[in-house]
Length: 260
Image (cartoon, rainbow, N blue to C red):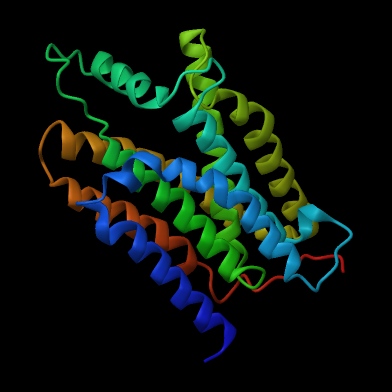
């Protein structure tokens, strides 16, 4: 069995461990962001300890950028879902539910559209799974990393847009401004500068990320508010959408942008 197959087996095992015990495991649902926070330094250590390649440009080292995008998102999840800039814990849950209930003009505030289980699966699929698959497939499959850049860019813009609309801080806004936008824009610029014919993939990655956010919100409401689909069906849709990037542009994107 080659290294790629071993890596895929490890990925499957990891996400089976995350999702299979979802029903009975309150620990994972409540503490996933804490596990991610403590795993981030380990992820960086393992990557650099096992690294043999050298590069003169971080932004054109696709595998390194894939790792950095995932670590950046884990840092963002700390602010968004654990302790925000105001010192509030788990503020995203109540903040978003208040926003959704206001948009829905709901009279019954006892029903929360965004459940802790939904937060857990959204973040472990559209972030962790996309990020891990990008690391696994890079540098040969550039689109996987572009998708991770896309989800980072669009999420950052959504936090900033919400902050402007409300004229107030929202959980995750600081890291969206300081980390997400600069990192994603710099990566996109480096890729476009280095490889002129990659423009279509960049555009598609942004479209994929926009649709990911649309699916995230509309699917959530369909499952937990309008009861059109079961919540487990919503989770399945999120997982399928997270896998799509590794299936696109496979025959066209075997590009190595490293300056080594």
